[in-house]
Length: 382
Image (tube, rainbow, N blue to C red; front, side, top):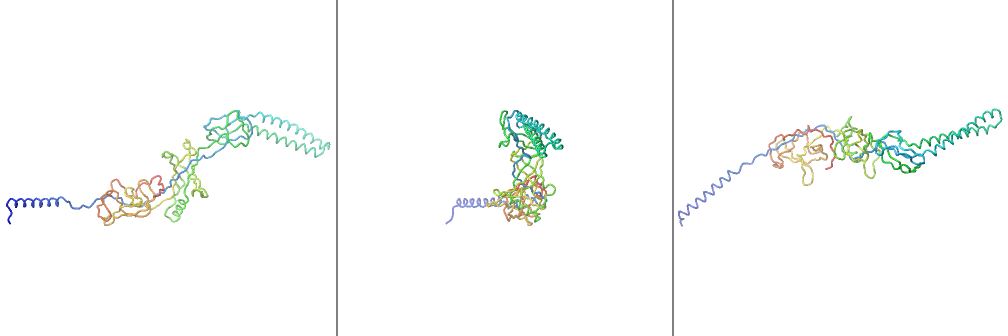
């Protein structure tokens, strides 16, 4: 059976169009290109590790002002919340009773002194017995002691500041009765310059630091080991450096932590007792630290940090890392990366392990070994 000429022409045209369309599709598919990635070359460096620890400020010295005699408050001689000097009078207690007692004691002393002086002459003449003379001398000495006691009590009616510092509110007013040995302080003075900062460190972290220092993984921080920096509650840095004073000799059984005490100059009284702060302490120096840029470190579905690395064949490898501490814009890597490794920080979305890539230095990236060490590399568990 023969096709009609019109049908034959139509079939031929359709076949030709399909052939041309297939050719165009083949020409439109470009050949696969090797992706280009930006890398940072890892170089070891000396890096000072610091620990950021929570703490609270504590007054350098605290003195509770208490009465040492009984009486009525006649005057309060200070401004609440103001600064006072050591030896400054704070209160005046009614001295009238104690003045009278002093005068009585002085009169008794005059009498007993006169008797003892007279008996001294008489005992030489054997007009009085030695026992009577000794009794007169003892009475004079008792009278002298009574005068001294009365003088002390008169002085105690003036209440003075035992230390210099800032005084709080007064718990008594004029007309109030105070007594020696009362439980409540009349006022409290706190010395604020310098000021203590008490911070806590877990015993586990302290033991790890000691092991790292003993094994040589860390070196001692040297002359700056005792220097402490402070961050305030609002996130601002305190302008004065402190110095580590001591660490507690025992571990708190309830918290498992050790208390460290630092002292800071506080001339402007910026720090007040009870403030919550963060202290940065230099723990040690890692002379061969591996710092990886944070943009080159991701986490897998299990939360394990990983990095894509270009090997010597320019192929991509995935590395699992141990990195539990940040250092500014970097991770401090304990395991998983070595000196000379090229960590991919740009073009991660175009690659997968095993493929070949073109390598260039990442834009605005320095070798990780030249990364500036931040002021505080806080210990952050990941």
